[in-house]
Length: 431
Image 1: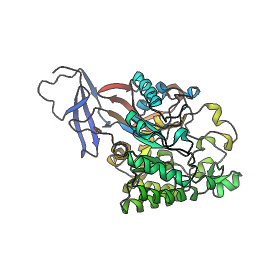
Image 2: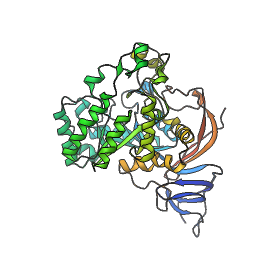
Image 3: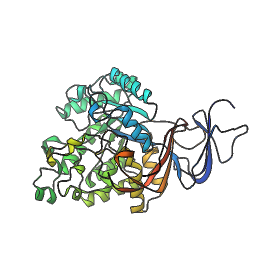
Image 4: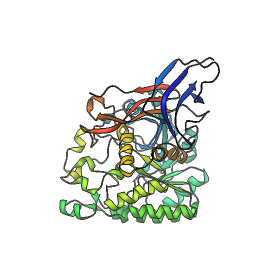
């Protein structure tokens, strides 16, 4: 048998789509899974990995990652963020289009693809701009972006000049059978807010963002989705009412999916007490009731994907007064451990969490070959759910240190990550 071969032994295989949750060995040849349990005839492993006591799962697919290149090199590089990705067990990530220049041309898609190929670690899928320059005025060259490899289009939280522009953009995307990601916000209601509008924002004297800034945008856009039939993914939901709106839309047969950032499932508005800028986020953290509803949405499948919403920023960007700081968390490396924390807190099953981190997001972008079945691409994460690790700069790969767990201990640690059967990360002993 020619070509490279890998054997992963003694692991606990977790693959909800393949119906696998068992102790078994995994056999890989030339980047593809060729057998489970017993070795095929003539198989000789070039490399053997012992995964005793660990999960062997499909690699994580993260739908919301900001890469610093091109244009924001002071915050890191494509190399640094892809290193952070594989250290977090992420084998495929979707980069957002708010680079400089914006991802609104095939040339920028090609540039990012070339740099990602040079990094030779995680796979990168581009999300293109829904409007030219993300300016919300004219639809982008959607056909060219799709041909260049963009898996979806979005305007992020940038405003549209009018709902008519949004309608035309969605209709244009529908004609090209291109998925649209919407990050819903009514900017006239957001009006410069920096946190959830409620008792805490009032006490701290901070301008708040009411829940209706998100829900009214969802309600309006759902009507436009119904009108155009465009496949739509609602990114980073933050409120209970938003989950209700999406659930109802799905029950009515609208072609909509939803996602949530891991920090929305673990934290609430209370985290900003003391003007803690580590929790300055957009959309903002909301109430405990909102958090509970988001978790219920994850459990019942209304929310099909959990992401990191990775946004690396410089240290100085988090040191101004709260409202003047940049929003975001550098979350690629802590996504899986935080998901385990969620699992433990709510007694969720390992397959349920793995589903929302792998098969759910891969289905949303039409990514094939994800799983631990024979014939699947060998993008694999080996994860120790019981290991404890200290989050510290010495073992941090991202150019952004803006993570609220810096210096703290988390349970759960990625032991190794494979992309196409090739080891791209192996953890070091915790200091």
